[in-house]
Length: 609
Image (cartoon, rainbow, N blue to C red):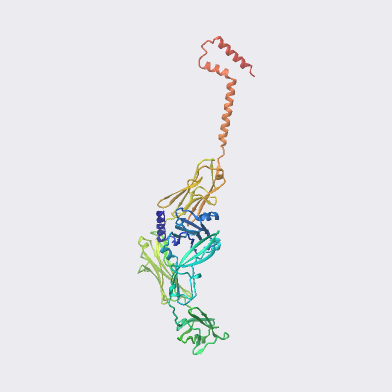
């Protein structure tokens, strides 16, 4: 068991550290024995909870695939519920401890979850499931029991109750303190109870409460905008500039000035301001929004001041408006940063670095490590530069050229750099040698192939496949159900794998101990599950029919035997005399009795019709 888990973890480390291999996500879940454990498969871009099938696999002692538990009875028997991205173990035990993996159908990404089950109180388990809360003395304090974001209603699980308990002290009702005290600090354990199928299941978490001395801080400060900030605007456009402030007194005032004159709140004027505020427990958030209906030349010539008038402290910021100019920030469009390019040794490769800017003084060039790549086309590695100046932007291209890709080229980093007075951009790329790829394919049997078998006979059907990935899986299905590898069953399969230098040969042998009528009525599917492509072939069994040639031969032999007996019976005397004469017995004179016997036989024969 430990060897299997170690091998799995080594595989995970290899997959997550090898370039070009899809990186896997990994997470840990800690739970006490007897409590409910919830495993969630991370969602990927392009997949939602309702439109993609999720495959769950447990890598524990049983090595059982959970996604084939199609009935609620099977799930209830194992104490496991599966619903899309959610896997719930109602009462976790050490048998459930191990690694679990999940993946979406047709997705190349697989996520791993390590479930650790503790049979006794563990400091590690407590810390993994612990949150913190800070409150201040003589103030209201509310503890919240953490809960996983799980749609329990879709699993027919009902939330029951929450109980709180403190280590070595009294427990707050519902986690609520009307006026918290310093001695209330400590670790609190909350237990969430859930009802499912008439049974109660629990999940516990701990909350560390830290009660600090009460602090009343007087503050009055403008958060935004910054003093002397200039705002780029378009003439005749509507512009709103928010002045945001934080204070501790509801008597403070926040307003706008135009020069030395007050801006009014009358919304029918060309320039006015709106005022809003939100009174939180510890502070007051104020906003004064300066509104320009249509920005004019006159507005561009004025200064506008946001002022926070407070008995504690007075703050102000002054801003100006500036007409927008057509400006395109310099940016590299392609390639992407840290992009890898698959190449063949000794081949010619050209990689274009494309950028857009608005200044013809900007420069686009390539670096090899920290050294400049030259434009000398006689060198093994060089670059060409072209640019097109459109009305609104300049399109630049620096083409990095490898005459013949070498081993040295594969070991270096190449950086495309856009040097600008406004902002410097760069992207770094690497070259990677192409590796031979063998697409996964099932070689035999053929799809819809029929196999002639005898009832009660032992039959073995090999499904053979070739692939280049050792994480691909080859297995058999009976209808929609998985055929198991348990050799004590009437129908099972054996799996073998041979990893050659360039390819992996896989064989899944479907074994029928004694072919039955039920086996003849089913379809059997060999499936090759791969991140690249999923393949399958379906076969059926047919009962052997009696050969027409064999039946004809049997009839011929029977007729021949009947004719032989009839001929011998009719011509027995003639045959005896012929044999005697043939053996040379004619020279001996027959005695009277013998002659009489022969005459009688001949006479009897002659009388027959």
